[in-house]
Length: 442
Ligand code: 5CA
Image: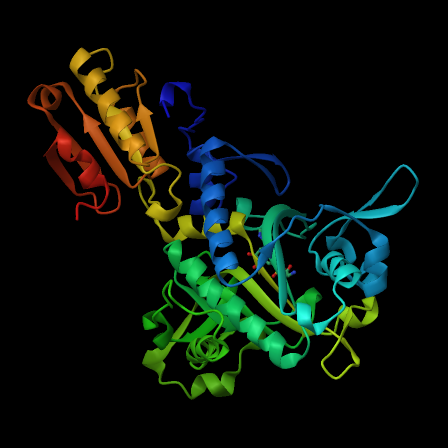
């Protein structure tokens, strides 16, 4: 992609309304634009990150056996009256009327709608387990939308819903999502700690929030230091093996970890002080087991092996991709800007032409752009006529993992400079080695 043809509205000034670093950097790097209170457009750079985040989420949901669907944003109040939540949900729900004066709403979550899909088709335990997920916009009229996309009113959510014959099956489904979440967050370079959590308006008796430790986090959290060293399961983890998955969940739930609402002072005092981590945290995922809370009132039941009808045991599993991006920036930035992990960087390489119009520089840049692109790298080629200083500042601000810098002297000598954004390390290499170098140099 040529920067001269791209839409990257970088802000020179630090926006005053942004209180936390991720919000400031997302605005400055031209990733998002505020459209109203708690409502944001995703500009090209931000959209690329959002897509990469969603791709990782999808891959890990699919690996764990969940199936992707897509449900509408606008829902009928009728469904919500069936579960009793139409009245319970309160002011956070955006209520709308259509031209026939029917009560509608903009979905804050989808338990009712997915339960309706399930009950319409699935009648036998033989079709279980089933887990359906979608990635769709939600609206919650939050009392205090703030921190940009961290707590907005309209936000993207991946929400998955599991259906099982009994508690044992539902617990296994819960465990699969638990492990899938550990993998998802690790792939984005984040260390997420699962903590016992309150279930709020979703309901149920078992729930974990996945928390990223960060000073700007909205919740106070408490956990054992052991979490900081726990290994996350690799790609080869067998989601068909309930014992293996259950074992991983056990390892990850044995040390103490709880959010403020679930904190147990007594248990906490039993942990040696040097092992206690009391910090602020950002909730990037939240999983719930709620059994028959929706299946019973909505009549979602299947015939069991005993020939009798059973209300299915359900759970729901959420991740906020838009919030997640802000959380990644909170965790990974420096004084010059964002420092993306390679897995979700909007582009892999910033190719910086220091002297546009110089034939040798232009030609070399074209060649490198083509070699890297052919090798599957996403390249943002800075072919603008900005001064070198401005180009470096932009590249640092938008945080691409590698900068390939082409100047006239190097071009004449057949060399380029390569900077690693994270470490700041710079090396000069022969042009033939650029691909090797930006692929990790191994
Ligand atoms: N139905 C359940 C699970 S699918 C549910 O709605 N859970 S939730 O309320 O905990 O939301 C799931 C995730 O969405 C949260 O962990 C968070 O990452 C994200 N999220 C929730 N509210 C917001 C918000 N106002 N802005 C940005 N992300 C949000």
